[in-house]
Image (cartoon, rainbow, N blue to C red; front, side):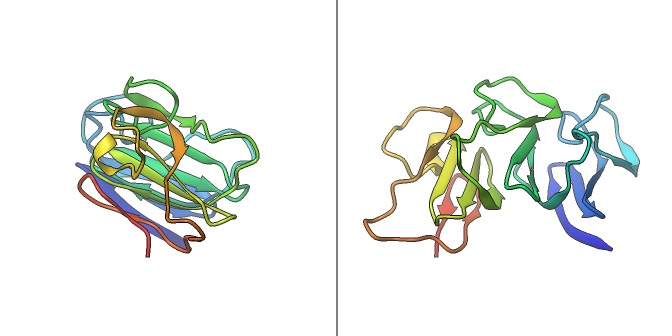
Length: 168
């Protein structure tokens, strides 16, 4: 059964049977594999053995994958650190997002140059372009940091767009 389908300029990804399949253009590494040309057919993404993906999210050029264990992998365009591996180097292979120890992610979202994660405790973490991070630090952040929600707020969902994030 086919799960979520998302698009990142100009590529797409889908989840089926715990695996991620990608197709389209790969100029920024957004297919998660070698090559920069157009790939018309789907190709299974290579993740560590035993990794089951439950959801995918795509921004302008980065793609996120949420696993059944609450970990996040990312790849693609990384000019603002939106892949979340502590660098600003584009990634053509999935890398584990550097979430703080003990954090379990339950939902993901990706925008133009920022990425978001909702945790099992209702906290939201963000990384990438400072315009969409919701943090007082206004510099590019290549690793996740907690969004400064109003006191007593527990997030239940997240969304991201063109340099902004949403928490209902």
